[in-house]
Image (tube, rainbow, N blue to C red):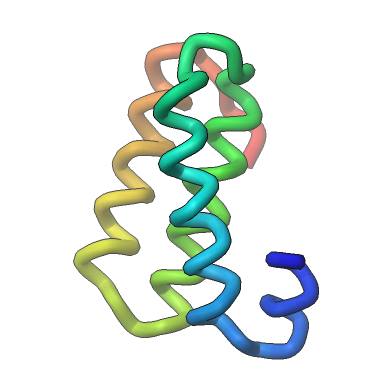
Length: 76
């Protein structure tokens, strides 16, 4: 669903779906792989950038970078 909205350039709807997912992520944070979290935050960051929200985009970029540095995941 989120990908379909993204491809249709409905960035607000795609972001809404991911932000709902973020609430679920918080409940199961310790069960989700760090690589998946990194992808998730990267995707949210891209959508905020597409919507020209630099503040939120920077926030999620910093979350992703923190995971990347802490867990030494350097693939993106």
